[in-house]
Amino acid sequence: MQLTAWVNGRFLPLDESTIHIEDRGFQFADGVYEVIACFGGKFLELDAHVDRLQRSCEGIGIRLLKSRPELIELIHETYRRNPFDHAMIYVQATRGVAPRSHLITQAVEPTLVITSRELPFPSSEKLSAGASAITLPDIRWKRCDIKSIALLASVIGKQEAARQNVDEAFWLDDEGHLLEGCATNCFAVINGDIVTHPLDHQVLGGITRYLALKVAREHGITVVERPWKLDEPGLTECLMSSTTNAVVAVSHIDKITIGDGKAGPVSLKLRQWMLDEFEAMKQ
Ligand code: PDD
Image (cartoon, rainbow, N blue to C red; front, side, top):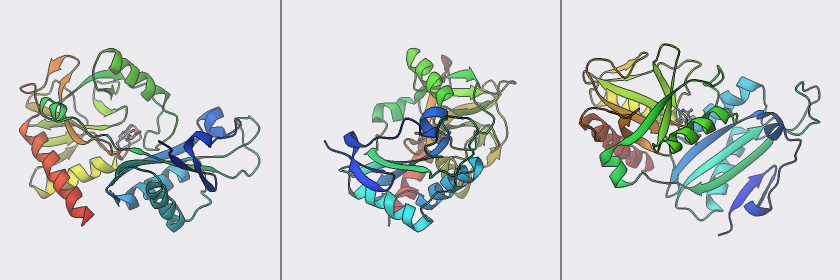
């Protein structure tokens, strides 16, 4: 199946698209990205994703050459030019091409790549049994609020999770609090409240996290943004959220069974409310 990518000013067959070896994304992971879900042509929270891309670019001092409306149109066009009804659109921006040197002294044009892939859905088995995870000491940099393409720690975390036959690895701070996963935000249900780490430099401000907390509050669930640990009394459920998963229960962490070892009632309700919200947003 031939896929089409936007690469630095034109649409190309994905297999024929290339990036210069002196691109600073390749040399230094000097870039940022977004992953945006599109259901049957309707984008989920596209504005929020573009806002976050712009914040990430500002965070590392990249100025995109495309205006916001141009960028949004390119995202739509990339979706249209690819065969997936439900898609995830990757937008990746790097500082551009320059002779390899940490210090950048010349003005360079940022690289912009947009691709589309099929959006995977968690299996119904996984949704009812809950996902599984491990915890690992956080070895990432201290600006996790920027959606950087420097994902080496997350790659290592995911590899370790796969080696242990689980779905995700959650990062722990020095005191043992759960921060977030390699590609997800994470939450606990403690005494009926949804608890999640506050937004700071250790956590990405997930668009799905924002939606999940909003929907939970609208349904009368108290949301508490504070550091939390797995061994807290009253903890009955864990969950994770991302563009690619919406919200999924996590029923086993470090081989410990959470609650009764399957997706709990709050997780299931929250997922359903989220899906209802997605439907409403598509109207
Ligand atoms: N990852 N935290 C991290 C470290 C992430 O990489 C992601 C998303 C999230 C969830 O953010 P959102 O709800 O906006 O998708 C949290 C994407 C999906 C990825 O890298 O593929």
